[in-house]
Amino acid sequence: MDDGGSDIQALIDAMARLPGLGPRSARRIVLALIGRRPGQMAQLSALMARVADHARPCARCGNISDTEICPICDDPRRQTGEICVVETVADLWALERGRAFRGRYHVLGGTLSALDDIGPEDLGIPRLLSRIAKEEVQEVILALNATVEGQTTAHYIADALPEGLRVTGLAQGVPIGGELDYLDDGTITAALRARRNF
Amino acid sequence: MDDGGSDIQALIDAMARLPGLGPRSARRIVLALIGRRPGQMAQLSALMARVADHARPCARCGNISDTEICPICDDPRRQTGEICVVETVADLWALERGRAFRGRYHVLGGTLSALDDIGPEDLGIPRLLSRIAKEEVQEVILALNATVEGQTTAHYIADALPEGLRVTGLAQGVPIGGELDYLDDGTITAALRARRNF
Image (cartoon, rainbow over all chains, first blue to last red; front, top):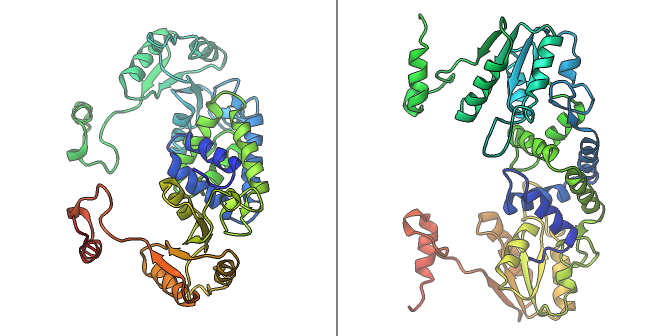
């Protein structure tokens, strides 16, 4: 394709490799950026350069941050004593959007996998255990995905945790607004088993 | 949302405003960029800065280019004598992907609109007329969208063109691979009216 400039084509190609984008949406984005008021594209580029320079995993919890300790770990208003274990930073952000949890997090960065040679050390599980001792944690919430890999990893962590600690997992059931007819059988079975008094 | 850094959140917000993206896809893209090998995000940022600096409309045809005259206008192998008029740069790129047209283009940048106060000058129609005189054009292909606005603009241009010029439009009909049952009535009617010997 001859689009009038190799840098423009290179930018489209690079954008097309981002998750959820393809050649068509990348072309649309690049054309929109070029068509906007001057400076807006340069601003986006500068912002991206700053994030590329500074974004790194929080030394304590693994959240992405542009400071060594992320704002959640650094916030004195967050409750100590509760650690919520999640697979990814995206999961942490999803929980934060819910605003229901006021403790701190621990990001594993994945799940245990013999096939991919991912062991407990790769997921920072020893670091989690040392945090539990140091930060006087009373409850660990295992908020891993409800997948086979997530639940296998959750069981491994639950077994590794010291005695006397409260260990919980997210409730499973019908999502808010969910229609039974569209739910998978496993979820319906789990919701029925965990039924509550009305 | 507390995601661990205002630059990161600002980047997500900026990406979420791009066409076709929203908060969820922007978060996914930014996390993927942070998670990739170091340098890749900086590269994308540098590429974007270069395009922001250099991309501009070709002085002759209006295609986006990082040179004053775009590679298509500048290519001596392209036929002179044929100008294909399109609404947007995206349309030009779409035609180039087809590799069927070997002449040159003229990008209007929109359609005539009394409501939005867009007149012939805003679309570079006087510039098109002077190109036709200067470049010894024999055929003008009006490749505007098959919408009311596109066809109104096409008729206006056809009326403004000098006598003795061949003026054509794209054929209308059933798309390749198209199924009649899924086509709108207008397309089927147009395809039937323009039927060919088999």
